[in-house]
Image (tube, rainbow, N blue to C red):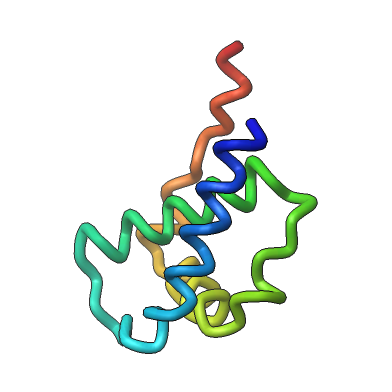
Length: 81
């Protein structure tokens, strides 16, 4: 789990460097990023990635308000154990 957590948050740090270029584009890449960030929030709720990635956090917070995100809830995979 620690290894996977490291991969997730290294990716978040890398995405922070690119987040300023995201704009209003909605494509499979942007959707994938949003779902991955939702997964990070769900899986690692104690880690406040937004503090270290303010540009990415602002983009995600806006993107997460889209109907396609609010109407599609990420299922907690742990519920299938």
